Length: 256
Image (tube, rainbow, N blue to C red; front, side, top):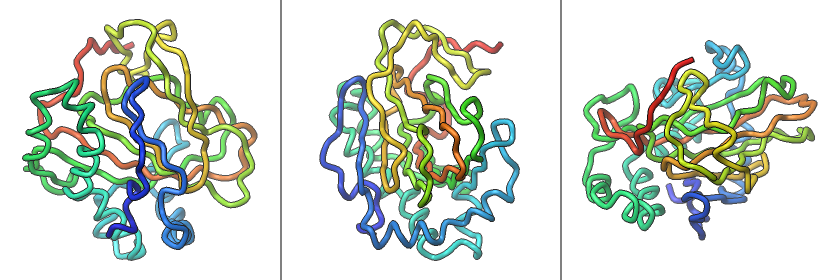
């Protein structure tokens, strides 16, 4: 399934301000076009919405057993939740993991991998998700600067911008820490104090663009507001996590 991997055109892993990957034209045009043409928007938006009713997610479980899902998407989800892909991600970030977590690398390579909510016995779990955001105003579509759940090892995002979508915004933004993060607001999505970071790089919301990062403590990121959108925002989330008590970082998580 080499032609279906979002990492097949990976050439560079950026280190600053934290390990991340940005790939334009991640998939061959023929593969991407078929995925785009068969994106199951109606099925995804028939589920219970999140984030105050503006975001829909359809996870690998049940997508991998749903006969409505086209075969190319079944193949895509199967590969990007597999141990093969998990190890491909670990290999890409290997120097950065070895530097920051010298005792973790061998465990990541040797551990078992399972799909989230399918097999609870894996050392690590993976997920692949259809994501659809409604075309709401600026305040409803932005994601303030935050860090992800500490159980997450890596997170990737494949942009599937719809043809004809000419709205501005929706860009993935990478922030550089300017101070030490000692606590995050868990209630507000692990939001980080504005005094502790500054945005330095944006990955445009562009079709067939893939970005991914290693979930180190300083991996602050956000999404810029969409301006006057008329189309729903399509993307695919690809995630690898600890299954159990493992964490990539530990700071105080407050609730307010």
